[in-house]
Length: 471
Image (cartoon, rainbow, N blue to C red; front, side, top):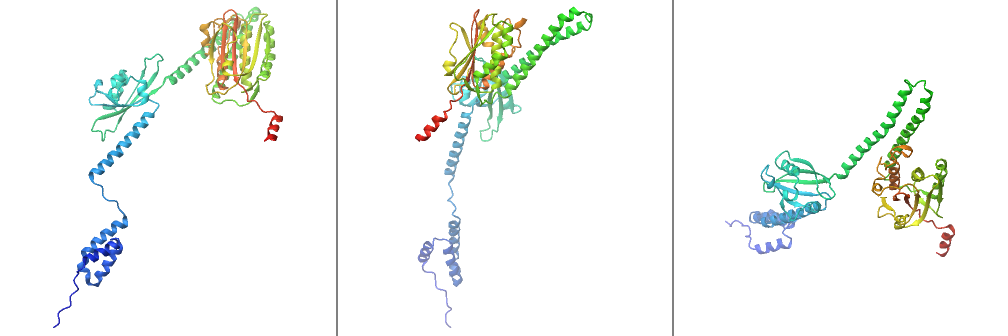
């Protein structure tokens, strides 16, 4: 009986390994092993086939090698450090002061510390070190209590406080608790400071404005009511009383009308103050129109208006508002000019900023009521209105453009006014990106100078054509 045929033994593993290596130990190697297994070699090569399958799958999916725990921790550390640096840079660039604060014990204000303060906080507060006691940086008890409330209370604390510098400012402090996960269990809060000085000043200014406006309207209204009551009562048939009271009533009604007109004009100007006009206006022609319009008023006071115009006085602006500026300044000058004197309206063109602000009266007290932004362009046209009246005290010059402010002599009598004329002039000049300047010598009069941005000089058609031919 012949011996049973036996499968040839697997005697060359080295050759098989070489085959797998040359085929990339991948899917091709696995297919070869599968074919060999089908040829009754499966039993011997099954283990090697599984290894080939794992190797092929790894190559097919190209998975990266596993990172060792220490290397993973180092990579995570580098990522977190990079994020921390980015967050710190973001806080450092904020315009508002920001501090990161911590504390371990409630109601112990000396326990609270700051761990970080950005550049704005370091500039505002007396901070000498990167970290330290919060009470050494902010001494306002209300702010420290707000931080304590954020750390150990409701999670948010707010307080207002005032700095005691030469220019006192009002700040709003807001502290908010942060998530303490990953911080070792310590309590953290973000303290931000917001400057509310200008906002509160605006609110206070509006309140003062409404109070003053109400007072200014109430005075003539009370006068009118009194006269009406008198004429409707015992003086009903008194012709002499009617002749005396009716002109006064008309004067009070005119005063109320002027005040309302000025209030509406000021409100309209403020709404469009951020929009600079762009039209080209002949300032000389506008001044001529004002001189003609105020001629009867000047003659009634025996005052002469004299215009001294420049050769070219073209400005960029709104003609109606420029006429309003000229008329307000000229009316004030006529009001205080003595009988028989001259009110001069002088125009000067092609001036730089220093030339527009150059004093016109030697030895006069002067004050800039409005100056254009430093980025304003180049050349200006200046309108100066001068009178020979009693002048303005030096101490009153800075307040001339305040609403309802009137110097002595303007509050009653024939020179009474609404106190809004120069405030309107200032807002118009601000819209035109121009300036306003006042000079005065007590007993000799005052000069108000309003200077407007000059219109750009346009090339003549002949010159433009000549340049085109040369080109």
